Image (cartoon, rainbow, N blue to C red; front, side, top):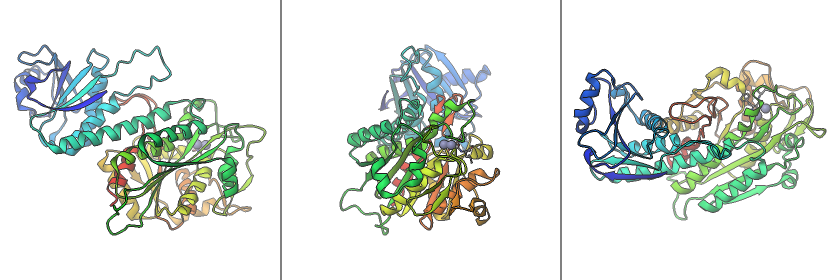
Length: 488
Ligand code: BES
Ligand code: ZN
Ligand code: ZN
């Protein structure tokens, strides 16, 4: 889809449809008042958030349709609301003959407005049709933001929004592919292609190299699959001469769980819904998407993306419950449940990140069903060993409209991972499963500032939302890119 910024008055805009936002209680774009008064007095339109009313062949306009979009209460209107309502309109009109959509900006036209609007459009226009030639989805051809006067901030916002939303859709593409078409090897190839396209350094560790290094924890998960495991390392370095203010030594690591299929292993999952476990690499997809955006936004801090990727399968070679493995850190782990595999691959990635000199770590993982019990599909669960680091991540998430909620990680929970035979067990008792999983990772982050994001509930939409297609959401891409951008 083409995205552009044009400077015109409402009556001059040529498009299949032009959308204007109107608020509850009367306020909206003055230019559209005549048409809108009619809609309001008829009772068809009140301005409630995401409400849509369409006027065909509106007199005096060049556009074929005028779409009134509810903005809700004006004092609650922000970038997150705008992103959502643009996506909702795009999804509503693209199946109804609209190919070229224009969107009137009004009021406070700053960078954030343009960015959020264009993100909403690109994300809403996305459909997972790559393996469905018979699909009748008809995406928009163009989305134009219309502003009354020229503003440099709008240009910047549009550019940034395109970068972020396309990166997020890239992550959604990775997550949508089924496990036969998105193996660890294919993820590595995709990462290599992306690194070439956006000029990032990349290294892919293979099984042999990981064996030499001593990543026994990751390799234990991988041993049951015929698909070889990989550890992908993507490096972004700010241009020479540019240094992060004051803290020139900061180095951010983004780590993403890349289990391309999670059968559970010998502790096998029930058949019901098992197909969904192709999404168990959505943390990895988020990291790859974020690195794609970071390569273009060029923040002032070095960022390393690390993706441990394996397939968790059942076979005669598969790891058994009770097996003890030795991680890269040297700590031994008793594998009480082979379905708690995410933490087994992430711990080696965390240790490796520290060895690469990363000073701040963030990981994203579809780690536990328990976080879905706790927070549903609304918030990502955020855990940390460092409140300052958490505050930075939450601030970035807020700016990007991604919901995250801080979870506890008190010492009392650590007791629950004790093992009689190894340094720690890979599961705790039934309750508090998202927290014991996070504590497991914390054991490897040790004192390095670290935030863990459990995206099991937010990485995937079971049903499409008004503004987004069903399936992988690409969550964390925008937050991670924003975190890096705002670091310095
Ligand atoms: N990938 C799953 C997490 C998951 C489970 C996401 C269900 C969405 C729905 C993870 O590898 C897993 O299986 N976790 C187990 C841990 C348990 C064995 C301690 C879980 O949450 O059931
Ligand atoms: Zn599992
Ligand atoms: Zn898993």
